[in-house]
Amino acid sequence: FVIEAPARNQRKVLDLLLEIMTRTELSQARLDGVKRVVEREDGGHFSHLQRLLDRRDSGRSAISQLAVEMGLKCAERPEVGGIKLEHIEDVFANWYAPNNMTLIVVGDLDKLLPAYLERTYGKLAPTDPIDHPPLAPGSGSAQARQELQRGGLGESAKLHLIYPEPQLDDQHDETWDLVKAYLDWALYTELRLKRSLSYGPSAEREVFGDVGFLSLNADVERNDTDEAERDIRALVERLQKDGMQPATFARLQQLAIDRQSWATQGNSALADYYWSALNDYEKGRFEDPAKRIKAVKLETANQAMRQLLAQPGYMRIEKPLFSYDGLYWLAGGVLGLIVLLAVWRWRARGKA
Image 1: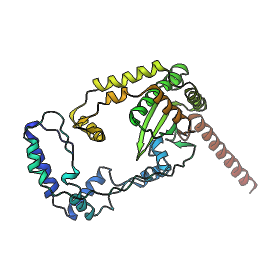
Image 2 (image 1 turned 90 degrees about the vertical axis):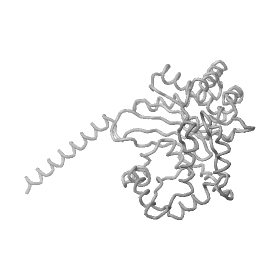
Image 3 (image 1 turned 90 degrees about the horizontal axis):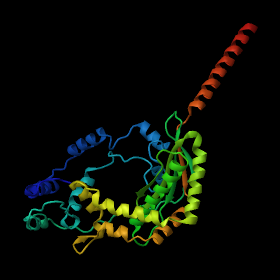
Image 4 (image 1 turned 60 degrees about the vertical axis):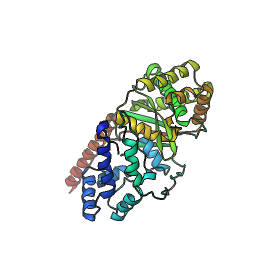
């Protein structure tokens, strides 16, 4: 739950939240009503067209499609129809317990809040730790190259060269964020400034389960697809051979550190940040992310990048079904076929 409230109302808000968690009346009629709301908001019921697009890989991004192939993401969207009242009752009975809660307050703090929490939430009965099923390891197998249909008509295409991120022993996220920043700069320099093949090439990171992917992306003209792919492959080979330029790495690292200072966030965004950073909470403090970024050495980033790019990668090319030229040829072929059929019928009638 993410709630924004002034400090003077913190205890009132937590009183209401406690009532929701402990005194909500559960019934089949209420569950059915909630299901209808979720389905109406397109969150738990999907049309046959949406499912057809999913099966044809037209309803998801290139990285998501690869994750589905590797068994890291469900092939179909979740449905609410199979959720039973017993499932909801089990969540309320075992989930909302004091030993399974973390309260993060960003901003002004009500001085009486600690004593209030001990008096109210502390009286809730603790529960045994819930066994969470392990994340799916994935099959690790997918087609090395695949073309994905996106739309029916157009002259554009998108290239995605996707690499699974090797697991690092230390500073995993900070290192890969810096590698992504360097690859982002290298792609823009090569494909936009030097080659003028792509207006906005970029690098992207996404995580599914415990497996991360780093993708090199380029939006290009349909006719430039082969040339752009060759240039991306050549860039990868050059980076493997030469590594990162020390001056460029230092500049990008300093930019990432500076961004921690000037990227002001609202209280809700900060609460989300601290929630995701709970693993770094030690001795009453969160570890400074700027220090973690600064601690990444050039040698570490170079080794990680070379290890990443040493893999063959997965090429995904998104393009419409037809180009305009292809549509003209198709229309001409259909028109020619119609003319031939008309001539054949005319001759057949003449003979009759």
